Image 1 (cartoon, rainbow, N blue to C red):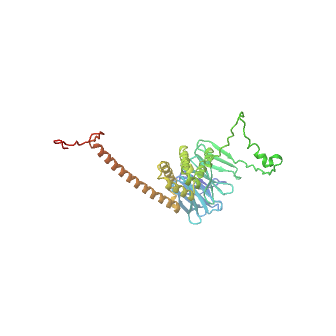
Image 2: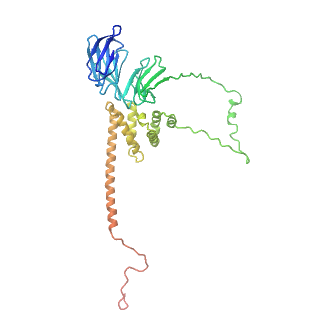
Length: 385
């Protein structure tokens, strides 16, 4: 099978080098195609005309067509033959062929065009490569992102070995990146029992009650400060985990300034989009609720407004699918309306104060002198005052 920019899909007989059948149903470049693993007579093709079509070689006609919504760069079909995947634009969509092309799921973790798809050796993971230089790994049962790899250039193709130990990535600058999975070393835990002086309580408290003499030189022993989880993740450049640690209940409710500081650090590192992407419904509801409760704080509102704009840019196409997130956004909108009304009232009060101060400055000043003499002297006539 071959797919071409001449808008055709052709099937060939390799021994005789002749064309068997030609399909001309697409109206733009046909950039991807695959054969149904369960039925070799059914092929799937994706085109820049935004459609994904299934063709049957026995009837020599199209049996199913779905609209992806954007130019399709890659298509893939599950081994069972009942579900197929299309990638185009910033989204990956999963379709049920047996249900007449019903949309099962939409994945939108990438920021730029997704160019390639591939399965793991056991077909339990879906790999997606994009022009945003990221390879995302998704669980095919929940369609959630479970891992991610960053490359040096935009990605054009992705492949993985049958044993899932070697990943090959082809990039736009002509480089081929080959990554190997690290072998996990199994550490055997051995239980040791202390014997001798180290096993007694007196051994551990020895010297703690000692009082130094006057001429002794004291060396201060400083214990190593234990870093918070979000600081540890930031030092390791694990930005998503750092954001998750700062959104823990005890952190975001008691010390919201810590969560704001982590968000500001992510904005400073220019990784806020990556840290906010690939989140589930529960996490989005927590994040929107945190923004709603703290956006009225003048110290936080500038940062939270930027974060809210990024969230809306990333999840606006799919936010309608979650009633909980939609309700949280509705509450945020009501909070913003109340805040804007307060701002209007403050502007009115400020205008009234300006008027009063301007009127007070325009009046002539009155000088009051302090003296022991009375302001009105008594009048004396013929010795009688």
